[in-house]
Amino acid sequence: MDIGIDLGTANIMITMGNKGVVFYEPAVVAFNKKIGEIIAVGADAYKMIGKAPEYIAVIRPLCDGVISDYDMTESLIRECIHKVAGRQMLMPRIVMCVPSLVTDVESRAVIDAAKQAGAQKVYLIEEPVAALLGAGIDISEAKGRMVVDIGGGTTDIAVMSMNGIVVKNSIKLAGNKIDAAIIRYVQNKFRILIGERTAENAKITLADVFDPNGTRIMTVKGRNLVTGLPAKVTLTDYDIYKAIIDIITELCDAVKGVLEITPPELAGDIYSEGIILTGGGALIGGLDRLMEQETHIHTYAADDPLRCVARGTGLAFSRLDTLLDGFEKISLYGGNENY
Image (cartoon, rainbow, N blue to C red; front, side):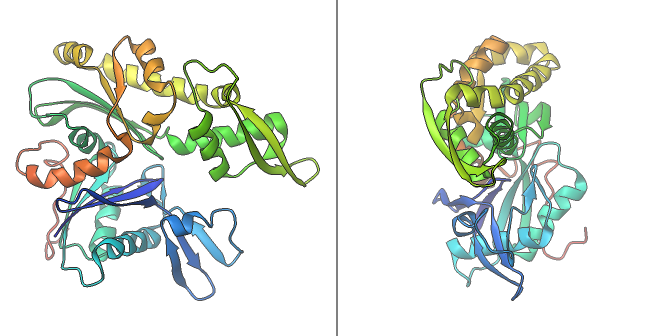
């Protein structure tokens, strides 16, 4: 059995065989401290964020694209695999995604977590490679392709040609930082503290970083920091724009930084082919138009950008022998090998 896992800071997605994406839920674990057991993972645990009693810890085991809580990550992977494959699963081969500038220590943690969850062999694939594969791009051509994968914890920017990564960068500016910026903005302007789920909903509903006009509105609820009482406030798309534009500008600067060190022949290909946006951040309103304005290169979101990386992990099994970067560097660990 072949399983592909996009283990993200915000969400975990699993592909199985030829079935495509069979599991897509938040990467959250709820742990009962009194009995020392996992009581919920995924969507069930996500509902508890900000609402659980003190003895239940609701944990995001990944932070900025890397494992921050090893035991919880292992439990998350194991429980999610059991949800889709049952507990009588034979030892599967697993392809796991990692950010493009992941360190050896961070890679080892991902591999160990997957092994403990029951994998027979573990492969690692860099997120930009999986994103382009999942977007349906032929990366074997001698042609430059640029992808910007904006996830929950990291944004990966890469230029690929002939199955290999030519230039890449990974920055810790992504969906979670944008949510935090919205929370900070509402706190500073309205003296109201809102939760991360509320901030994420506001981002999804209102964000427009290219042409906000202040006409789209949304009511959010939280706690008044002056009185300590529950309160609500009306946000506009222009409020969200002011909250997040500095982060989006920094993101565009990172893309331009990668373009500046791209070989000229590949830069010409990118000018012709455009920049592909994948990941949840690709859905931020107006981001494609803003990036196109900043880079003067056609920019567009892939079809179903949220699932691109997960689809790419599933497609990677048919390319184990042809992919270079991401699978040449990829670490392949068999069951009895020393590493």
